[in-house]
Image (cartoon, rainbow, N blue to C red):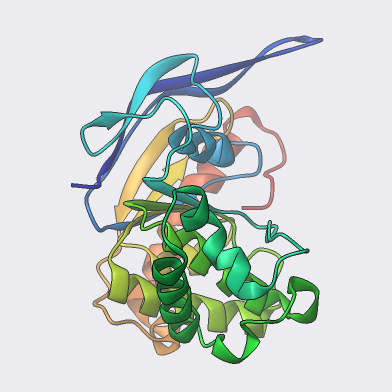
Length: 262
């Protein structure tokens, strides 16, 4: 099983002006093979929660489990994809994909076979010997996803991976990611500011409150799969979007302040 379970997670960061509580008693359960999106206003703790799931930071309180194993540090069972492409510029595309398996001691033959298969799935075979600087933004992100999958992780943690892409490239990347998810069926936790993206991609959308971040509501996305861009224009899509936006703006308006961009 590759579920992600967070129970009672809180995170307090010390600053010069006193402690800042980024997360407060967050409980999340993402079932095995589900695609979960996490949304909320800027500064609500979405990325902090994802970094805790990745083991990059330790929570002040609470626990995270992947399957039946506690998360205490980064591990090969979790693949991470960031908004910045984090590719090694001195390595060619295939070498970037092979990098993780090489650290695990996978033989050159086996890691080359894995890299070639993933690059074919990503539509990047002809760019296997290119350097990252020679690729477009969308292609770089595909390489980053291939590199994460090369370690055969149980879960993928994705922090606004398409945030730097233009609208057309982003739409293509969303379609591509749903195809890859259908093939590999990894459990995915996906942070985004884009409500349309969250509804299009997710099985569920976790809506967070403003800081300190809590889970306001878990919205089930009941639009049948496989989905297409045509679904974005349907009444049901509009209803879900309105509901999620209402949750965000209603909560943010409680103190009378101006709402941040969702």
